[in-house]
Length: 482
Image (tube, rainbow, N blue to C red; front, side, top):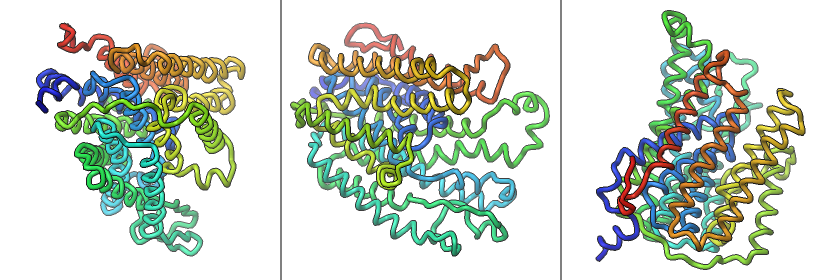
């Protein structure tokens, strides 16, 4: 009976081949994380979280309802943002800065730091995706208490593992992966940065233990483990490309590389590789655990509409303040990924509208806003009125309209598949085009810049994802095109 239920709720096990969620999640993750490189921090990381989550739901959860589908995608997007609190630029510096070239110990230490930070970053996304796919109903009050516990664990971990931090007296944590006098004892202007990976480590442990022991969720800890593996492998592997270039500059001045290297943005190549690996790992992990996927019983929203809109107003006010203003009191608290995620995680579980709002306008808002800031005010590449309308007002109006329309008509959908297909296409091309504008439209037939190679890669990824969205059909509908 259980086997029959699994095939009814999802799809016959023989239909999905392992490479489908792996390859397409890798395309989504590669493009998404490469785009994240222009926008940074927690909200930037929500883009690959959104695209990878949409990919996995599309292939692995075809018969879920629209609201349950949206909840999974929204949780995956928000959770991917938690790791954005971590600093990693100086960790990368240990592997490639001029003063570090030839220092194998610094290279190994930097790669170890990237493995730890990558593991924590993707581990949270895997855990929350697993919670959504598991079919277990996580209530809003329960998640509020859980998020408070995660924040408490975060501060405890920072205190125990990321303290002391007193650069003025050269006092740094015992385990530290950023700029350190240990590696550069003669440095005069060294500016170490505070790390928080210890806090995220403690929080992730609490999350995994709670889902595994407290809720008997067999999928969340497993998918968290695959996310951890994706980060452990993906971040250092991506950085190997960039470090190899820094360590072997002479090689890239010879042969065909001498023609291509001036146009290569190795940092963005690192990000794209990291995203592709982590997306593929999450896809493989979910495919291997596909028998554990369950359909969640639908439930009425736990929040009244006024409560949802109040939470939305509070979150958007704090989000805009932390992303576009400099309000010290807000930055000290809401610039921590776990704290920023409290309202969304809880509201996604308890609200009727929040899942759709996360998938559409909320994730888009900071990306669109930063694009306007870059193109209108930093580069003055476009007139303010045109820039605001083209890159902020119009995209947000379309996204908000889509979220409200789907929320109102969700009951008319036979399953979440049509919602996922439309969202897949909308999000893929919205973020591709906004980032393409940020890149100043690096068409391959125009004069090449350092944005051109990544622009081509992202275009290939977008076309691949579009192909899946348009032509993939279930066998149950008698047309399987992929």
